[in-house]
Length: 500
Image (tube, rainbow, N blue to C red):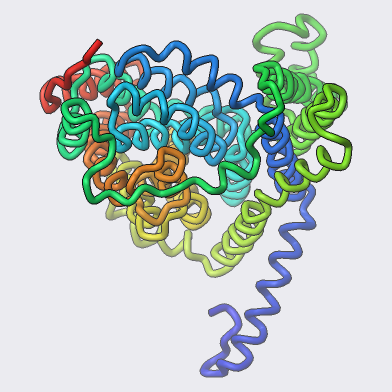
């Protein structure tokens, strides 16, 4: 579109291709973008080593021992999903195979197991402070904020959007409500009653999916799984990241000319204000890459030092993990390129001119959430949806209401709408992997999950984004939303037996 002159389609295609390739090269040449890509790949290597050493399996096994009833086994599955917060794929393919024998014994349907796994995969990875999602989300936020000239640290902005991720948070609360009340509704109620009464965890015509991918990084049978094989590498990642944020921001501020910020560190370097200021001034892409690299080196040293893996095996597993996130790097580069071309096309400026007088500002977060849901459901990718909508939503939000809080609210609605649509989509990778991990019929999983996800999304809009768009404080919005979730489960749900 940019290169076509009149009807000269040949030049349009050729010059358009050259422009696209230059955009990709420029995206990768940017130090921030390069750091984000490297951080993704390094975390992929770390996750592979932790899985192969049996760390994730050991944590899951330890928790599984506490599952002694349908209620407790579902709750343990939920907790396990929260603990494996660093990657949605690792979550789906680790929790499912470990908890499946337990939930089968407790007569919990595979559909319910798949739902709990799926609803604690992308929703928790999307809001975790450190995960394979953070790099991508922070990169998109940074580009969007730069486009409107808003001077906000991108990682700090990402953290500030977490309270506005209503669907992510409410779906986690919804799971706890169904477990605590032992109430289900819709197709899930039928599935749970079938499992409780007959012991059939799958329907008569179900075709369970098998998680072949889960076996690739399973620990060898002769390895004794240890929780420390996960706690030490992941803990070192978190500690290194937080220390890195502090010292990187500290050096940046002390090397600059802002006397007010420098005085904060001179007076009380370990105060909350100093820590928050340092985090805000840090270069997240560099810090997260360095932290992932340190954690990867520690995991390598543990695997080799404890004789779990030989040197060549450990390096090979790390490389295998890096390869598993190559697609993320590709998507990142294409999203950044698309964002650059959208800016040149003036898409955001056009939408602002058309919609700024037509949309009441308070409705924008809800509209963006719905748009993100539709695109993500249709394409099966939350990453792609975020890449499409983020460069459009930030300028539009800023044009309608030029305040930082309103822009952050709309950023949250993009990220959350993309995850909701992805959560419901039958062609989504995490939906498929959840079916695989739980060995559930994929269509049965999609059908039962859809009946739960839609009410939560509706509450997210009516009790979350609309009141927040009207300026209602989160201290009021969240209690209302949580009460609505509890009421939904209590009113629509029917009691499911809990045999001792």
